[in-house]
Amino acid sequence: MRPNVLLVILDAARRDALEPYGASPGSSPTVADLAKRGRALPQVYATGSWTVPSHASIFTGLMPRAAGLSRVPSLNAPKPVLDAQRERVLPEVMRRAGYRTAAVSANLWVSEASGFDLGFEEFVQINSGRQAHFHGSGFRSRLGWLSETARASVDDGARAAGDTFARWIDAPPDQPFFWFANIIESHSPYLPPRPYGDVSLLERLRAGQDALRYYTLPAIWRSCTGGYDVPDSTIERMRRLYRASIRYMDDWLGRLLERMDRARLLDDTLVIVASDHGENFGEGGLLTHALSLDNRLIHVPVVLAGPGSDGASITSLAELPRLIADAAGLDRHPWHDDLPAGIGVAQFDPPAEPDDPKVREAVTEWGLGDEAARKLTTPLTCAVQDELKLVENGDREEVYDLATDPLELAAMTPADTSPDRAGQLAALRAAVRHPAVTAERSADAPAAAPDASPEELRDIEERMKLLGYM
Image (tube, rainbow, N blue to C red; front, side):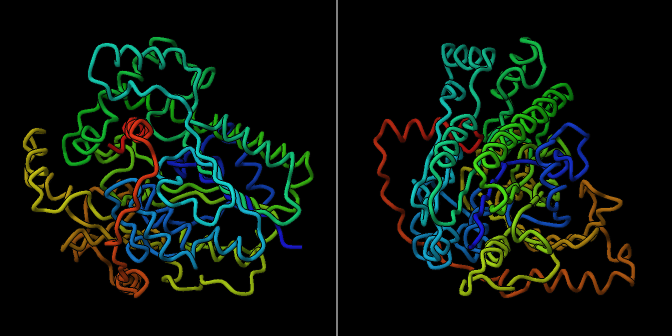
């Protein structure tokens, strides 16, 4: 019988926040135990630095530009793009192969509205109930947000997602299943419920104020384009609550796997736990996961155990569909060894074009100059292998030695590149020019008409603002 597959994406979980990748003991005991039962893959790279391009690769096996989802102007824009290539969308392929498919997501970008429900026989969208006061401008909105912060009784959907999994586990299908989850507890604004975090009421209120000031999309972009002014005390608070959010999410995962084990499902299930991208906390003047392809964002954890995990090896999240198909014993599938072997490649397309007048207005308001405007409008492509990284930053080529410059602050000069690295650098240049990397799919398909009511759309907008996407 084919194995079951459970794929859990811990959204925005940094690689170094998990024990198999160097975090201190007790940071993520469930993930650590999973790695002991199976393996933690050492060198895996996301294909993008935020949710949609990364999930586009996880679901299609394509690079973001080839999938047509490297730049997404609206929530429902991915829907027609994914529908047009349903023959290679992972849950659809699994469903046609006889798997029962189901998903639960707390991430608005991975939703029915966005089209990522394609192929799932059941798709559960979680709204945690966090108040939408976060982006309000009035006193009552601010008071409501700080009240929510102080109570610390609401998570970002993990509790409700656990209830969904409990229902599935208590009545498992009589066929192999493919279950998927996106859990956003470690996504900004990093405010886990009590008792996680072990911070005082005053510190929680300060964290809520930090979110209002630094986690809005304009504030994030301003920081990442040269206007970084976040106090060290805020960064330390962010890091502490982020670690608490990771532990909360790890405990959630532990309860899920224990429930599967009690139901005698775990031994027959390939469990894959990964992140779609990492997160920045002031390193190099960067916040969250915007406007960058630095290694803290694209070097991601992938831990797996169960049937098919022995010998499994990938370098890119775009190879996850092939790994799953091989473990499931699918004779026919659309994913093959199409990407550069042994090299991580990622792409980022900016939120605006150089001639967009809003860019000039924004950087002028922020008191920044031409370089800030360039960062907001310049596409990035990178290739990385071991400690050498090549970045195509618009028309600039930048090379970084990650061993001596892990923050990627100073590009190497030609004189710095030793002759013994010439071959590796040539391989990186070939990787960014690989046909699978340079392929582009038109994203001009008409946007799907939203099914949501005006009230639902307003709620979606407020929740996206909470996550720093608007």
